[in-house]
Length: 109
Image (cartoon, rainbow, N blue to C red; front, side, top):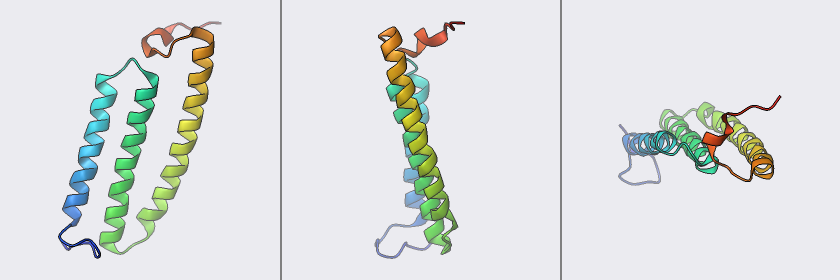
């Protein structure tokens, strides 16, 4: 593996390892904390950022800009997901005075 220019001593493996660790941390955060909706949204955002890091690392390593273009699309989807998730969170908190995910299983018709 060749070193990424401008960052002496760092190879593609370093960036992929960091991305994998961030991804694993976000998966652990999703599975361990299933009560707080805000923490779940933050873990999903961390997962998307880990994927973005891998896209940028591969894009730079291969000399292709395609991965960096995908990052912009992923960031757009992540921003929309955050906005919609927070809007739903505000409505749920106004109606139920709680953001506990376990209390959201009852449907009103």
